[in-house]
Image (cartoon, rainbow, N blue to C red; front, side):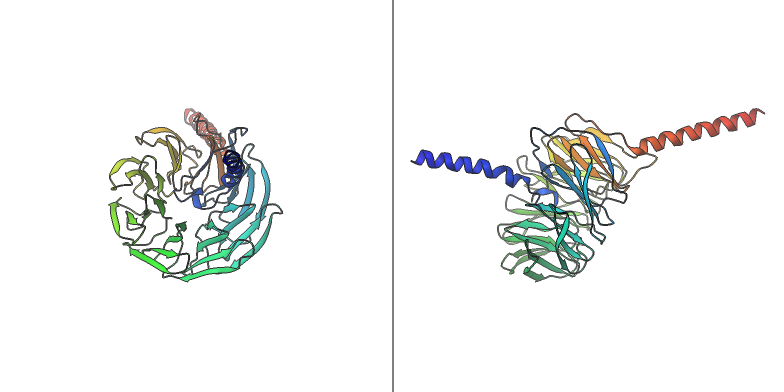
Length: 399
């Protein structure tokens, strides 16, 4: 009898696992910000470029066979991950810097005029909650959508109808994206504090840093790690907010920290121009990779690789153990560089990222293959024009 029950239980878990794995419930996919989803065995990694026609500042979301991305002008598009073809689009009628999250065919995203829920089956806004500008990326758990607003409120809404079940007034503007762990919500504020608030609305604790907190906190080993624009990365105890360690990275941290809990590593970018890897246990710097410009993109992890963008227009893939460069990609071919502040996401061997030029790119992270870009053709055209002008000048000089 027990053997039969065990078999039924295992089958049930196997049936439920793929469904749970489909959802993209937070910024960068989880509380560790790994931004990685194991792709299905039938998924073929193709190289393509897609023009969103306005800058991409937010991070894409992966759901089933599509990748969902929103431009800064508020145009939401669903794109086939394999082919790079547009499936459908929706004008949110409001600008946005928030990233979308998706759960059970419902997409949630913050906009200048509040939070919106989109039904991705009929491609329509199912409900909207009016409040001040929402730059915070929502977090979904237990049928609740939690997010911060620039009005200083931390909200929790019912996923089905947008009814407010949670409303906590905090200080400053809440641009940081929250995480929810063990019935506690962690979120940063422009007043320099990180807050721990219980889902029962009680304030557990707050910790004050030296400047605004714009990045999203991450969670590992009963600690919360978050960056501040004072240039430091902080590690706090989950229970009481006591400082465990603090490391100065010399310039503003807008990038959100990404944790590899199996290797006790945390990766974070800074305006100093580096991606830095630290030990989550004591903050010891393991390595730091310079790019020469601000790193505001949140890194993504897959196997031995860590990937991120820089404001110098390059996209980097490094060995996560050594910080050495595996390969880099410059879609702007130097002449038409665009900042890469959008954070990458990975599905199987396919990596996706956007840039300020408005393009979304699909790379093969396993084979280190990248797509051609329109900027390459523009660069060739410029080169041809320069050569032709030089020929004409030389001929005139000879005459």
